[in-house]
Length: 238
Image (cartoon, rainbow, N blue to C red; front, side):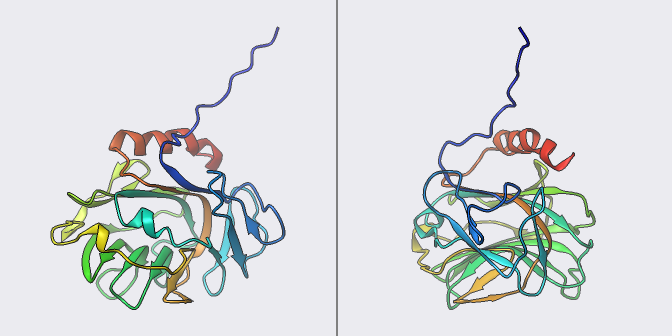
């Protein structure tokens, strides 16, 4: 009798949404939520995915999750996203995912290509007008598939990992949550992937490919972040 071995599975404890963007579409424009929480997304402009992800053109392509995840972002949470840049550092700023109201409540991660920050990864979390910002010390220089993981612990810091390893912060932009109260986060706008929902309008588009996208309603530990990378990397030939 031939033995069959199954691959280890990603930890799904407190998993709120999981978009397997490498798995194709449920219908012509629907991205299924594999967490089974019903947060199905909608493709805007982007062509059908080609394994292992969605190729986004940097001008109009993105995914509308159809959910604000407001209750999740009012507490500790984590977001994982597999990304492949077309160029590194990119020629222009690109939002990997994001949602913003008029300016007092923001969740987002983007590649900052402004003067003096030519390719640094920046995470911005803002609740009730008070912000915590994490920025990488160095530029993103790889066009290989990369897993970025954002973890937010309201009592300490916003942290960002690259391929399961904590990214070194740029000076004072270390994600310090002092003065920020997560329960002050109030934002009913829906989260966009591949761009930012800027109070109802998409802007700052990512140019490249996006694979798995996961949201947890807790801050993952460093060990858990590393485990997600090790378990899922095979899909991206790493």
